[in-house]
Amino acid sequence: MRVIISMDKLQIEKKVNEGLSTFDLAKHFSKSQTTIRYWLRKYGLNTKASKERAKKGILNGRNCINCNKELTGCQSKFCCSTCKMQSHHKTQANTNERQKRVAKERKIKLIEMKGGCCENCGYNKNLAALQFHHRNPHEKTFGLDVRKLSNTRWDSILIEAEKCDLLCGNCHMEEHYPDMGNWK
Image 1: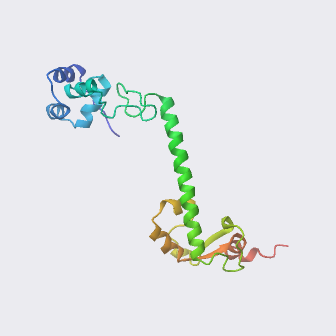
Image 2: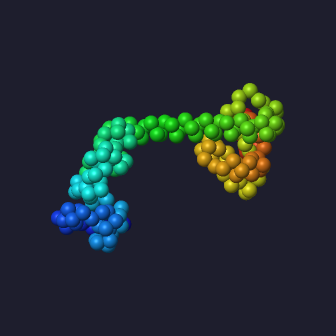
Image 3: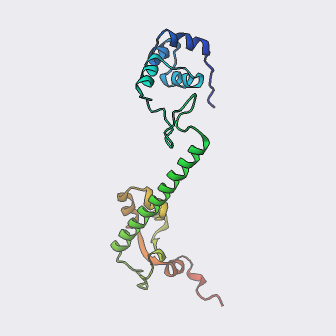
């Protein structure tokens, strides 16, 4: 558990008015520059250098990353909760779409490398129905699903694919459940 020890606003303000930089403030208070910047933002204080940058129009990255509005106080990325949610939804959508695209491209490559059809029956009508069956489940490091195909290094995927046969969904289930063939 992290404990945040409050710093006295008046002490910091006094040293800021003396012209100390964040580096000098960190040395004086025996804190990190990150901690000093946190308390400066929290108390709405600006060092001499940051005031000069503001006069020149250089905001030192202190703008909302969604709407570009200037940030105040302890805001670090977003000016309001609406901007935060909008940015999160954009990022999430982009990430999901990218993962799906990369996984599909990689699955197509693997299927082509394995001959393009089910190794048992020759099925090849729908790529989504083709699956990778690990011949020896004890050697299985990970499954070749969308998440792994999009987030794993290609060389690791190739090593895992060597342990697999390409089967359609029906043949794959028959391989895993051979005793369920005649259920009547």
